[in-house]
Image (tube, rainbow, N blue to C red):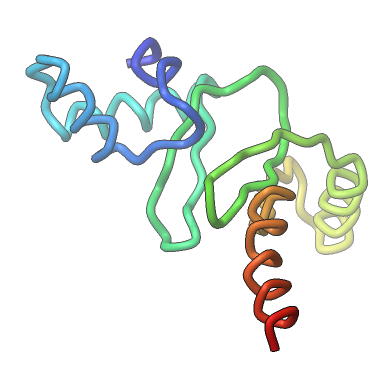
Length: 129
C-alpha cells in the first residue's frame, strides 16, 4: 500500500486510491485500502488530514513532525515547520494541566498560482468596465 501511496501526486482519498488500484488490475477491497491507510497513518508513514469537505485524505509522509499549507483549489501541499505552533501548543497544554500534548495543523488557502488565476478574471472585468 505504501508503494501505491508513493505513486500518487499529493493527497488522495481511500476511495480514489482504491479506484486507481482497481483500474490497474488489483483485486484489493476498499475496506483493505481503508485499513492499510489507517495503519500507515498510525505508524507515521502517511499523513492523514481532512479535506475542506471533511473527507480523510492521505499522502506518503516525509519524516518528522510537520504541518501543511494546502491549496483549496488545486490541492498543492507544502510541508512546513511551525516552531511558533509547537511552543504555543505545549504552553497552552501545560497551562491547563495537560501533558504529552499532540496536535495537527493544516492551513487551507489558495496557492500563488491559483490566487493569480483568480485575480485575472477580476482584472479583465474591471479593465473592460
